[in-house]
Image (cartoon, rainbow, N blue to C red; front, top):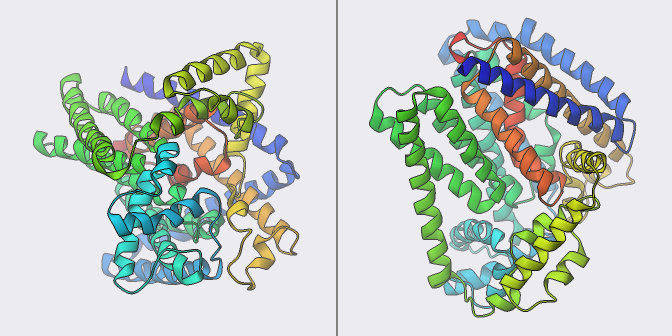
Length: 488
């Protein structure tokens, strides 16, 4: 039964992911087929590397292997940090607002002047608290949060650490799941060549700072499935729930991993043990989320103006229900035309219902496809928006600024690389239909599927998929290697 369920999942994933890949190619605003051809060549090169070059690393002793890997990672980290410093930008949009609000938090231990912003954009409160704690440490060295180069330096440093930690966790997962030195090396190389990691290195926002938490949940699950002791299994399930909560507090979409974990618990063990693990996960998540909410209400924010300012979650679903699914000033103004939160919910529910009722089945399919391409088919992941306001001119801006000579080569490289990853993920899923694969690989696939479904309804932006790119890179690496028998 479990084998058939795995086959059905991977078959469904192939259909959904294949449709996204096909439309990403033909709807790309430049020459999609040309980028796909380059992506296929890159995929062939990665396959050759994984078959004929990297397996030689499997013969190294663990001492020599660690020396090689740690040296390569240290060089990567140094280059990554240097690039982040060169790409330093003046913060824009909500990133700038969050940064500007931090002195209020650091001065009072809570938000007073900026309470109104966190009533409206409560989803950014976790990001502000994370940055606030980090900038408190930076303050011990005389650094304060502002839009200057020295003011953004601590935020960039934290972001670099988060991205490097994500790469390290991904390599650790490759070791745990795929077992070999070659698998770790391949995963590391896929990450090192993934340009959006470099492009987002100076952008200390929720898309990047939430990234390690999803990987920690995946790592906890990988350990959970190998643990025989009931108490340890419950502790690992609770740890996964805690990791999901902290990721969710920084970026709400991470919560889909909790649903994927619940599904995997029941596919991996008997119902009694699965229920116990699910209870531990929900208890950890629920206690942290409940305490977080109480803390907000009791201390962090002054909620006096809640009825006048608060925006219900339905607004973002309303944004995602028409046109290209992006921000709509008309939706916002309609929501603010009534006086209370309850009235806003009712008004927005009516607008959402009317928007979807207006679609024929074919129109709805076209709309959802268009949103999926915007979300999953952009090789830059909207990084160009954050890189348009450099702190100072240097050679990197010949590539990252639109109209400069290196910009279009960068765009084509990123798009070709995205198509390479998409093709590898599709190939791995197709193989999993024939030889069903569970465990962490299936958890990654179910998590990505959950995000596809969530973002088909939510506001549409390419960067909203960015914090799940490590899951895609893991699936791409696994597609190039024969999975261990125990994963089947």
